[in-house]
Image (cartoon, rainbow, N blue to C red; front, side, top):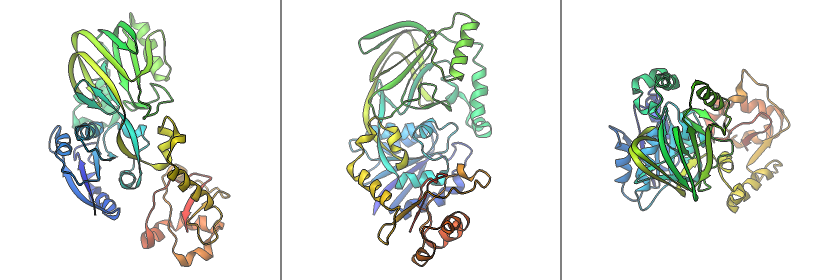
Length: 401
């Protein structure tokens, strides 16, 4: 039997994971895993547990916020033999999970962790440390780790906003020399970030709309120090409308970058304190680690989606063939009927239903099948086969026959 380590932060988010641990483990066991469960007890506990993990495990699944996934990834990067990581996001912002389209629903994320597809993701080296999706300095970068956990549990993302407002009247500025790709910038900056993400601080697309996660390059954003209140207002407005303001910002992509300053600058790595440094060297380790993601989203994360394996392409072809079912194909796609939106159900995540053999002849390919799937789905799913995890789209819904 395959072996898995499930490590989770019991204090992350609003404690949403605790009542669902049994259901999560049930999903893991049904996927064929022998599960070792470990709730973290202190800071860097997840890192230590992964570093010390004995050989013979095929998967590590972690649950918590961005800090938890950072610890697990950092621990995995220390190991000679690296294994895939599944992630169940239960933190306050969950930037990394949002970027990779990992489901917000806890049980669906658990399902993706064991039944999804491994995606080879870039990882960042920060001097002797590791980060998953962001290394940053300057304005607001200490908000995430200086906001108390109990406040985050009560207020959620609003807690970060309130903590950040306190800093608007005391904006630090740093004189930094930045070197990358034979280029050099020397300027006063209020903020700088090196990212591999589509979401930062819960805000999407503020660093670009065409970010991929396996190209071996980071997106770099540097914001100059405003000379007056008007310039500060222009910078904030540009960020809010997701518009790069070239008068006040530098943006570029690179796989290697250095930061030098006369004073030590505090940095944050994936929302956690990364130390104070007057010299920082950041390097992109291309496709260094495998993260479990939903198969339907994997192509949108890749630099070259056409390089998906031949096996995956053949599997998709088989699914397409399933549109015309003659007794041998397993999957049917019904595209001719658009179900009514029962109070916003189109925005929900639906799963396919495996229909027992004696239903196949009666219901196959008809409108009644659609009604059956959506109206009687919970009963038939629980009684017979359960769920198989596929997103239902308004004009293209899948069920297995």
